[in-house]
Image (cartoon, rainbow, N blue to C red; front, side, top):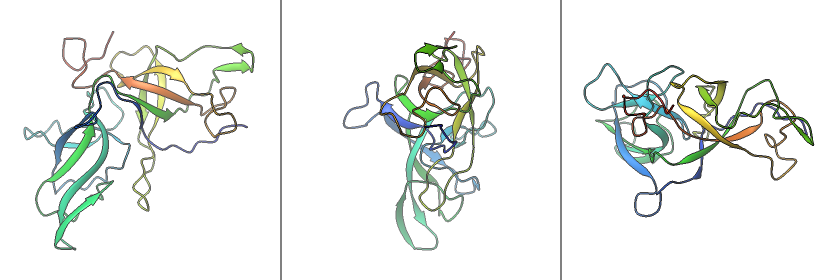
Length: 208
């Protein structure tokens, strides 16, 4: 079955030390004035123009990411109460938003890729493998109906400032969209590369 591009963001695949009670998550803050929606499974990054530690939706670039957003809580202006949400809609908060982010440096994530070259040239012959290479993110379009991310990975290569590194390729179970390695848009497992809690010792510049 040929894959189709249907991105779902970064879905936790395996936690590094992510058991109870934290489940690999840390709490960060989103400014109530941040009008950029942040979806479940989005990569997030620091607001570099702020010295307050706020985060926002990550975009393609060389800035180190903070982690993967998995929900938030805030006092709703409209509902006059504290609400829990799997995405930040970009407004409606009275005061800072408490965001939950998977930032365990050893966590890995399932994500769809957009690379034009398939992993296998046939079911029995492997072509160029992405495993061990770095990749950039593409924001895509999140879904407000359920808060799901639309991010996927792109720009595979050797650039060490890319935010992710490919760990493996998913091929099972067969027949599931993204699990056909002979066509474009196959699913991969990635780990953090250029992340704030995982660097090469010279700042957020990637793991060489």
